[in-house]
Image (cartoon, rainbow, N blue to C red):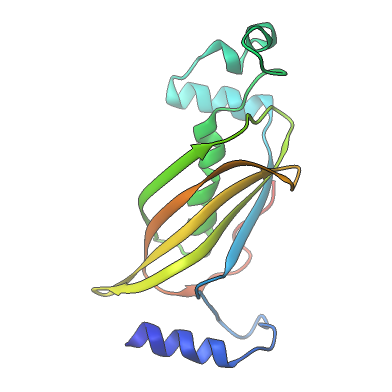
Length: 165
């Protein structure tokens, strides 16, 4: 009931949100981040994940199997989704993520990642939020899609925490 009241009160107001008005998450909301992955990002991710596949480090090896050049790790690209969610909802608990890798991401590609709220429901004293997740190369080509579930402490978004890199 509380979630419905919060959501319906936000739906009644169609004016833009000001910095003084707390923004409440509702179905259909889209949160975005733009990122360009660098050589250093790929190197650091490889160190943490222990994924040293030559496709990430050797241009010739990547071209030999049909790619244009060195690839960014798919899971590194997918890491943008929990980053977006936790940047707006500190303390969020990531519950699940499905992923469908459609096209490769190369070092230097501009990636726009989005999470779009598709469903919200109260779960004990928290909110279970379902998101459609997408990444676009150069703002157009869908390279990654899926769905995510996260437990949120609140539906009130904190603004300005998800910085573009």
